[in-house]
Every structure is written in C-alpha cells, then in structure tokens.
Length: 284
Image 1: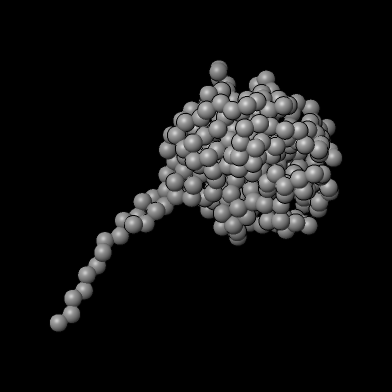
Image 2: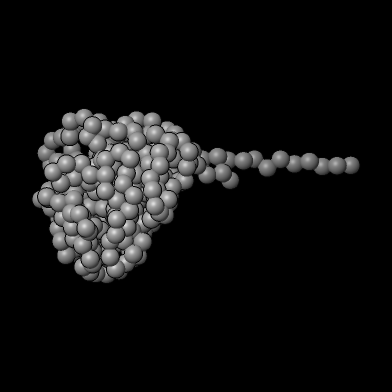
C-alpha cells in the first residue's frame, strides 16, 4: 500500500501598501537603506537639511545634514549613507551619515544637481546631473577622494541609480525622458535592457540584477504616474502599480522589498509626505 499526499501551496501576489508618513513633506529628496531601516534626507522646497529614519512603520527625526540640498546623489544604508551634489545650482559637497551625525567629506570634482548615485560610503558612484548643461560625467569615491570614471553613453539628469561602484545601474532620466538603462562594471558603462517606459524623476534602487523603478514625471511637473518596473539584469518587466500618481520621489530596497517616500503634487500643498512599501510575491 502506498500513500500520496499533496500540500496546498499559497502564492501571495506582490503589492504596495501605505507606510508611515514622513514628518516633513518634501520632494526631490534622497532615500537610502532598506524597507525596515530607511533614511530620508534633503529635499525641496526650499532646500532642506532634514533627516528622518524609518523602522518599517514610522519615521523619526535624526540630526540635520550640514548642507541643505535637493536632488542629491545617494548610496548606502541607514547607518552608513552618503549624499553628494544636489541643488540649488550645482553643489559639490559630500557628506556621510553614521547613524547619528552627518560629517563633511571631500567634494566632488564637478558640482551638479539632479545627479545619479549608488554604492557605499567607501565605494560610491556619481553620474550624470546638471549645471548649465546635462552631464555624462562619472566619478568614483573611495572614502577619501573622488576620481574620474568612464562617461555615461547617454548624458542625463534626474534619473535613478542602483547597485554598487563595480556593478551599478543608471536608470532613465531626462528631459526629454529616456528609457536608457546603462550598466557600470567599475570602468565603463554599457547598454542594458531599456525601461518599458521612458521616464525621469521616479524612485528606484536595488542591485544591478534586482532593481526597481516606481513613479515618473511624464511631462508637465504635475504629471506623475502609478507605474512601476523591475529589472532582472537583462530586461525590465511591469510590476504592481503604486497607489497614486507620484513623481520627484525617491526610494530604496529591491524588487521584493522596496520603500518609496515623498512626492510632488500639482496643487497646494505641493510637497507630499506619502510613504509606500512593496512586498514581493511570496510562496508558502
């Protein structure tokens, strides 16, 4: 006699859900870390130096940045973050956060705002941006100084960054909006799979093979989007939509556990404190 049993499998689809609101509403901010240990800093308008820490349910105020700024390049974790560049004008200041305080670090070689970034406090990557024109410059940070890296194939600003200094992504950007996605190997950029939708000013992060991008500026400043995409190292695919049209936001995490915060609205009060969390598909 033989017995055979089947255990039922439950698959829960990935979805976005509301998280705790920022204490300071803003857009064009920087966000680093993870869904349960996030860091939000800077933003607009006017340029802000406010820092907040997220524990998976609520934001609490941390110590302010030394330099108020918006659209900074970012990288790192809640207890070891880096912020560089930003606006207004084209800032070159770099700061790092140790979980308590921000401290000044060596300046970028080329100051710029709306700059892309990824990496860590000892292996950072800065690319693109804008001063009087859109940049294709790349700089690498080793914890003590910035040096030139390989130029982007497509100059851009207000795109998103993901990954590390030796396995980075430059995602979207503009204007005009671009679907270009480039991969960095520590020396040079090469074309990766294009976004499904050309976009800028969304929130994105992750690794070179597990990146996400949510929200977008599709035209006029108020024209946001609910769409989200995920990258597997080869191609982008449609992911569950966020709850409301958003742009000029920022995010951290991966394709299975992401956090986005802040946004711009086309009407007063303009600055939004919205936070959303994404949990990927689970099987039990």
